[in-house]
Image (tube, rainbow, N blue to C red; front, side, top):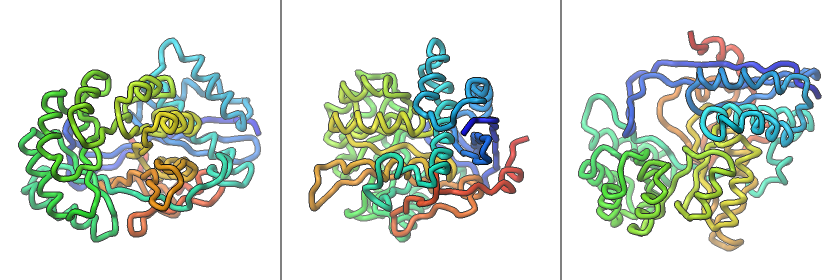
Length: 377
């Protein structure tokens, strides 16, 4: 099965109201999809996390290395492209572009063999995956005490067993909002916080110590990703688990992070860290180091499907037992007009669990009409 063309789709949609995390406001959502065509009429789909227009240029630059190649040689193609760009692209947008290509190739492989990707990865351990609700961002107007508490209560009513709160808006503000959310959701629902590396180690430790009483499932990206010493300092000072890794790339980047035990939960993004091929290797490395794996997922239905296919085959974080700790899916609940619109059948949760698609490849079908409606100008 030969690759005949590689196409990219940049999509964009305005939001009904802006929302913010600790570092920026969003008024639109974007996506960059990869489409790989073959001489057998099969088409594979992938997605790149990150700046859509830059990722498009990267993938188009890689096209010459792909056209005419055997689409089933996923490992060889990954190594070949990585080697071509090694001098200038060991991290960042080069790997993000390669990630979208790799996911599309796995989608093609599954369609060629008429099997879901998880079957080709060794077979499923689970047919559905526990999900936590990512949301609780800031809005332009209103009192966050009121609207965040209302939003958190809605997630619990929908059946989610864990939610994640965005912090990084000042230590005192974060302490208040963490208390409010814990009181709202009660003691039996998991609560994680995510600072998006807004703090240095001093501030992160101060915040962490003040909110430890609220049983925090993990403190995500407390300090900048390149601050190795800061991660270790925060991790040593706090009782709560530390999570991170969405800004790291490939097994080579994660090697030091895991070996130094910078985090308790590692969070590669399948659409950024190297695709399914590389993230399976990262997950195996994390397991060998006794570090839990909970991927970052903040894209469209393609990103969700790719995450589910991989999570389906990963072992529990604890040895086989009557109380297994399963890897969790990040299920973004913020407004994203593109996320489900591109899928003919949306991926939804049921009581906080998401079924792993069973169709060939990623197990999804793309709505081409939606691609045209949402195409960026």
